[in-house]
Image (cartoon, rainbow, N blue to C red; front, side):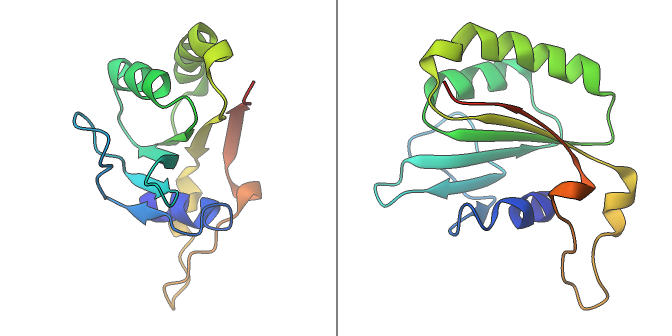
Length: 132
């Protein structure tokens, strides 16, 4: 899932890295991270399970960071409702978007024989909470 997410955001964040630490965050490690020249987080991706406490902490602390929370083939409504609540609490304090991606089961076959990732935005479910 991390590779698929990196593929989707690669054109937007050229320096995206998988499984790397963010120097300003002692508590949590991102699954994907893109930083600027000052090492401020531009993009932070979380794949799979993520607690509500972690989501709350991250979106409150990093108001200028574009977040994406990605899941495999889950029921959309419960997770979206939880994100709605978290985002609405902080909406006026955030200057970057928050995305939710739900990969479909068939997306697991989106790797060509040569190893190329063949997934694009039309292949997935995307919900966005835009920046204010």
